[in-house]
Image (cartoon, one colour):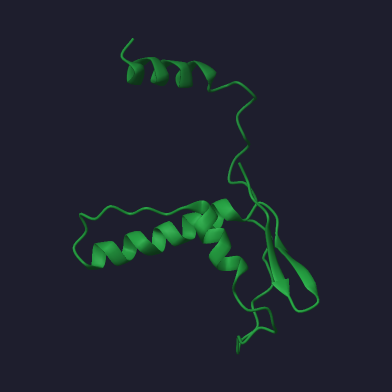
Length: 103
């Protein structure tokens, strides 16, 4: 399930992002885990996707306060070798699934 994010401004709703709740929850989870590990770990970490989305939707709307501009995206590196043919790894995957499933 993916969730879009809409904020509110003085002149009405503001579209923030589509299908953003899941990745934001992942980032917040990583942050919470890092903080827990710094305290020694062993803690239960509960991150609700809806809560994270609501928190981000409530952030103030305005111009960026960043002092540096982001670098433009770079094209991906070319492949180091050709991709395997479609289905080439099917037998290996089925064997690994059987082994891990105990059959």
